[in-house]
Image (tube, rainbow, N blue to C red; front, side, top):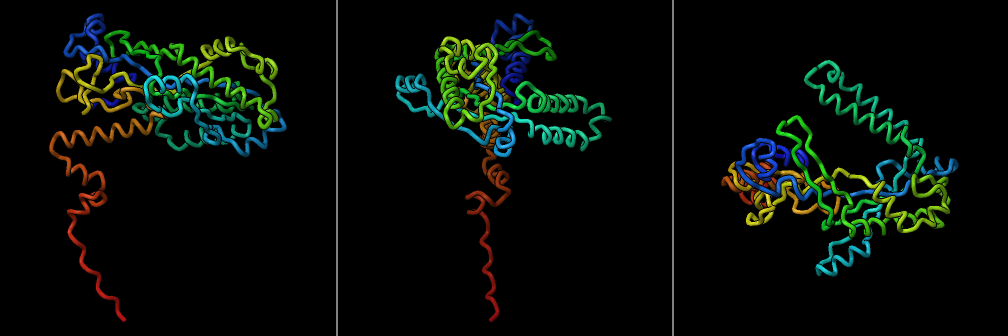
Length: 357
């Protein structure tokens, strides 16, 4: 069972002779299963937004209400462009835009610094065991990111609204390709964020909505100085920014949410672009399944964490079922007494003795 994520999974498949014939032959890798879909169809959730500085007198009030997670203020909405897509397809796909109210205020710095310092001190073996160096390096980089982005970064003392484009039918598609036949070489990643004009139109509508929110009477008092590089250096310039200027800003300032998906997608085995069948089995080989976000036919309209956990759980269920162990799996998954089947098969409990008078 391969579960390395939507970037490493296609890389490992290709290095293992499973993937597009032209790529494998280019790097001298023998072809076991020619699957053009391996590494193609890369999808993600692009994110962009507007960040402004909070006035000094507002920092204390805002910091008491907001943290840096963005979960204090979340809203979902549907762009007109997405509504047009749904009308053409005859479906209702739900909201395609997720707005998140972010805070990067000074009072948040101390808890973050304390957390990083406390966490590093709890595991002294990380500094003495050479086998744990990769873990130590990862935690060090994570701590650096937290401190620089939340505490010391350019966004310090700022608030803003960002938008995540969550449409499952977004048209922009990227790819993961081999850099070489060496497993230690990182693959070539083309994220193709907002490469399709319709996707840019949706994000443009979101940015205009964010601008409307930030400049509304109820929010304006929390907005201090505006210095959005390449777009506006004042509230007045932000209010007057044209669609062309906003579009250029989106293409320049958008980024990833690391929700990479769909690079080994499942579907009808007869489809040449499909990598896995509905039981997550890789086409053209035996005894190999994929269980991570890469098998998604299209990226889900939300964070991919829970969906990836569900895929792993479903993969375990499919393996048990395909090997005639479905009942054992059901008992194991509920601890031997939680599911309806186990309850039905369990012996009846003896009647409780009558209570004494």
